[in-house]
Structures are given as C-alpha cells and as structure tokens.
Length: 233
Image (cartoon, rainbow, N blue to C red; front, side, top):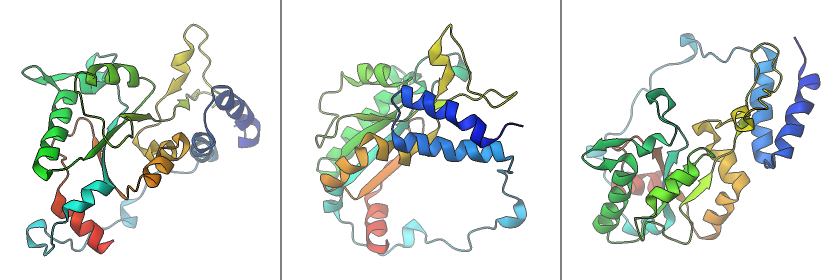
C-alpha cells in the first residue's frame, strides 16, 4: 500500500488549488493519515462504560439569566443533502407538515424563542457547498431572521473524495464537483476557525453556542440549561 508521504502531496496540491484554508487542510490531513495507517477507528466495548450519574433537569437549582442570551448563538447544522430520499437539495427543504419544511419550522422556532425570551437571539446555519444557495434563497422570505450582524451562514469545508482501490484522489473530469464531499458535522470546529466565524463571534462578545441538526426540531434552547451551563462551566 502507498505511504502517506507518496499520497499526501497530490491531496495537498488539490486542496490548495481549490482555495481551501489551512484549518480544512490540516483536519483532512489528520483523518487521511489515520486511514492510510490502517489503524482501527473502532472503539471496543471494553473501553467504554455508562455515565454513572447526571443531574436531572427538574432538580436543578439555578436562577435563569436572560442576559446570557446576548452572548449566545443558536446554530443549525445544515450541510446534508437528502440523496437517500431522492433529493438533490438540502434535506431541510423537505416538506414535513402542511406547507412547512424543516427550514420553515426552524425560522418560526427562532422567532418564537425571541418572543418568549423577550430579546434578540442570534441565529446561524452551517451550510455546505451543496446546500448554501438553496437554503439562503428559501430563507430570504423571513425578514429579520438574521441578527447580530453575523450573517445567516458560514459554509463548512469540503473534502476530496478518496479512491477505495489505491487511496488516490478521485478524478471525475465530466463533473469536477463530484470529486468533493462535505466532511460531516465533525467539521464544525475547523470550519468555524478557517472561515473566520470563530473570531467574528468572539469579537462580538459571544461565549455560548447551542448546536443541533436542522432535521432535529425537538432540539430547542432551554434558558435553564444555558444558565446552569454558564454557572458550572
């Protein structure tokens, strides 16, 4: 099998030619190095165990602090396509109830939380190169959804596809976009760093982020949990 030393230069050159930032390249290099090494990425059952105890929400003795909302951003991970369901756009555009898509209900939830908390709650999406344009076009009908001067999105990185046979970069001259894929939700931190989003959030005084998937409508921010988190961090 080819070594990392022989394989990596082609990937590095390809990613730099695509304009990817240093954080994206470093994250992919680490993951690709694990693949090339042949190391197992499985965690055996013998190495894990259950959490012994967790505080129960109802039993928490904490004073809620609405002022924390000014330091908090609500982030939805929205990089996935619904290819498994025959879609070629963001799966959050799938209608789920009456005339509402996931994105409709997310926007309505954000406005509802702002009303409930009586304040401006910052909201962003982490889109992918596959979902960005469709998502922004769809959400343009919700005036005021963007808040805090943050913009509605930052776009996660993209990773070069790897050929299974010899681990070389995929080459698809007929459609070059098929040579790339979103690297998944684990890309959150490299994407925030490489896109400048982390620096922007910190400069504006944000300290907390509530993160959930765009297809998880049950995940809404709880001020009690936020207050507890800030108190016990």
